Image (cartoon, rainbow, N blue to C red; front, side, top):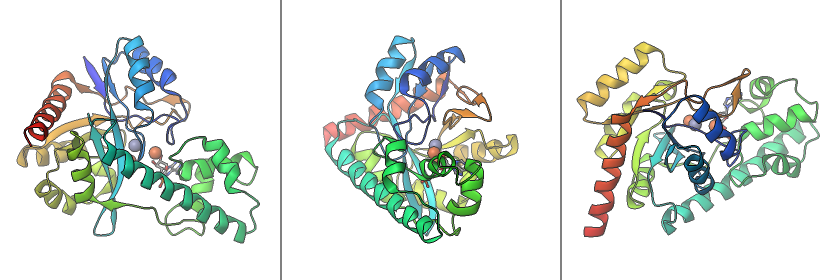
Length: 279
Ligand code: AMP
Ligand code: FE
Ligand code: FE
Ligand code: ZN
């Protein structure tokens, strides 16, 4: 049994509904999946049902936007109680900030002479956790850019003219938020983030694992983080970070970890939940 533990749906910036993601995951031969939409757990209920219907094991998850000393760090949370009120309150705060950020980026585009409205972006996004990919798609749809890549390169990448900073919580707060909801906190794609200096402080704050396997990791990158995980006694996870079709290909299942890795994540979450019960 193999699992893909990093997946997005249209509850954030993925392009598929949970049903299609589950169908594609089953077709790819996976036995388990985790949904990790940005700053939301909203899709988890639907993904749980879709996974069950396809005979897939399902882990609820999210990908939180955090920061360490000014660097953006994505923290994957697994197996949290999706009804946890503190977690849900934090999600609402993230989502309000994401919507406000869209308005700021659209205002900058307007200053640059591009006629786009925030409502066009919100309609296209049709979710509570919109992001730059939705702005990029809206620019393409309006005929203002030829491709999403062009939209990012010209306007939306950090320090390009329409970029606006994103609301982030500290990595310590993010780890605490995941833990208090009974979940497991894993640093996403460390080879993409390239902030190894953050790993030790995060480990001290209770970080549970490293996403050693990711679409954008080379084999050497994966080996580097496997070694770090071993040295720091951190769990090892992996996933494709599939957002839908990538250059015509579905990524789901292209990065996978064996059953033991999934069992280790679940065992850690079970320990955490029982220690929360004990108080
Ligand atoms: P945001 O959460 O608004 O900062 O947007 C970040 C998301 O944009 C990432 O999770 C990726 O899904 C996506 N992204 C980043 N760069 C590009 C790009 N060049 N083309 C398409 N999507 C991108
Ligand atoms: Fe994304
Ligand atoms: Fe990420
Ligand atoms: Zn992701």
